[in-house]
Amino acid sequence: MTAWIISLVFAASFPAAAQDTPPKQPLDHVIGAVTAVDASGQTITVKEDKTGTSQTIVLANTKTLLKVEPGAKDLKSAVRITAGDLEVGDRVDVRGMKTDAPDTLAARSVVLMSGRDLQQAHQAQAAAWQHATAGTVTAVDASSGTITITVVAADGPKPATIETSRATEFTRYAPDNPKTPAPSQLGQIRVSDKVRVIGDKSDDGATIKAQRVYSGAFRTLSATISSIGADGKSITVKDLATKKPVEVSLNDDSAIRKLPPFMANMLARRFNPNYKPPADAAAGGQGPGGGGANGGWAARGASGGGPGAPGSAGPGGGPGGGGMRSGDISQMLERVPKITLADLKQGDAVVISGVALGADNAHLLATGIIAGVEPILQSAPQRQGSVGGDWGLGEMSVPQ
Image (cartoon, rainbow, N blue to C red; front, side, top):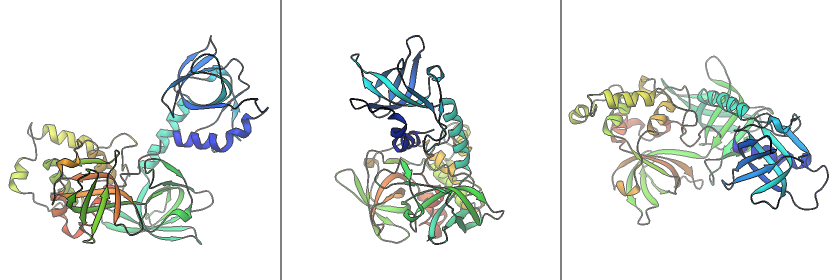
């Protein structure tokens, strides 16, 4: 299914299956995707995940060929296959020994995840992800195995109780590597964490029997820029909810975008249907083409998008009765061109998403900054501290 799952499977359980007879020299290890198959030559070409280089894998004397289903955590359900079962697009874990030929490995064992099965599994996971429940943790009770969260619904925030069990799978987006989730446990979830829950909901949505819980110490805040660091990698902002300063660090993965005025006013009306934009903004809202170009572009953004778009949270409804889902908004934001930190200035209003560095929330590692949000904050001043949170869990993309 995905790189992190397949690595987990092989790292946790493969060695026991691969060591029928200990080799005289250490085995080389390659994990990647099959890019070519040469049936007559009994070889496959694998593009290695770690290095991006291609390796030729010789299968003539391979002793162990196994296939596992996507999501498998061990080799208990693995089935034996033949070299003829390998196809382009499959993901494989190969262990073997180097040969005299460059970039060539004589495989001792190969474990396969079918490319077709992986695609189907990812589509099913993406569908479940779109219909997951997203919220902010308000309480964790380890003794009862329950998590209380606040969910943003069309008629305002509502509490929901997540019921976990021994069968519940926990995954966490770590602060040091927020783009790559890893297996976790209930005890790692903290108050104020963002979570996304896949499971069976009660009719009123107040209770969820969790199958999978994704969590992370993500924060989203609405703020104004106080200063911009001379190093070009940091800014200081004033949190509009707490009125306190927050230090924001940026790295190469931090995305900065600025909403065009027509989109900012459109989103402002979504948050507050009674919002009236300034006359000059309303006149220019349609942009070139009399609304056909920008309006159609925005409509395409709101209709959805491919799985994996940050924040694709599924049903939840935006505030103010607009019916906009948090996933819809984030998918629209993905289409907004990126800018640089040099394009921002003191006093600009921004919505910042990122990972809290420390328990006091005074320092944030930004994963995304959205500028041009003044109309949105003006449309819902009583909610300035939480408008950004309604835009979904932008950092929690569908696990790959």
